[in-house]
Image 1 (spheres, one colour):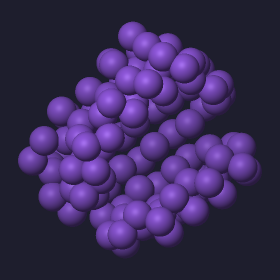
Image 2 (tube, helix red, strand yellow; image 1 turned 60 degrees about the vertical axis):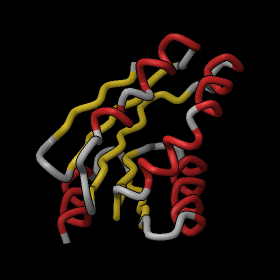
Image 3 (cartoon, rainbow, N blue to C red; image 1 turned 180 degrees about the vertical axis):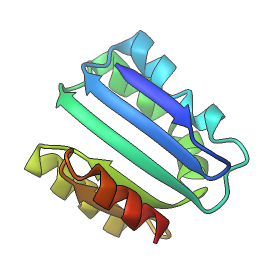
Image 4 (spheres, rainbow, N blue to C red; image 1 turned 90 degrees about the vertical axis):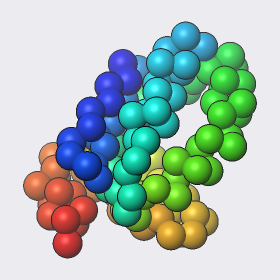
Amino acid sequence: MFEITLKGPDRLDIQYSGKLDTESMKSALDFINQSEGIEHGKMLFTVGEYAQPTLGAIAIEMSYIPQMFKFIKQFDRAAILADQDWLKKISELEGLLIPGLEIKAFNRNEEAEAEAWLNS
C-alpha cells in the first residue's frame, strides 16, 4: 500500500506498507505530481511493514531519478515514522547526504513528536 495525501500548501503525507511491484511503484511515484507548487515543504512519511521492492519496481524508480532531484529540492524537512531501527538510521543518514533536506526519524507511536518537529 502506498497512499499520498496533500495536507495543505506545503505538506505531503505518505504512508507505505508492504511490497511494491512495477505497477504499484508507478502509482507511488505520483507523489512527484502531487507536490507540484510546494516550496519549503514538509513531509511526514509513515512506514508500516517493509518489504523489499521488486526489481521491476526499482527499475521504474531509477528511471525517475531526474524528477526525484527536482522533487527533493521542494522540501526542507521530512519526518519518518517507522518501527525498524535500521530504516530510521538509513533515513537520517540520507538526510545528511541530501543538501537542504533535514530528515529525522521517529517511532511510529511518536506521531505527535514528529508533527511538532516538522512545524518547529
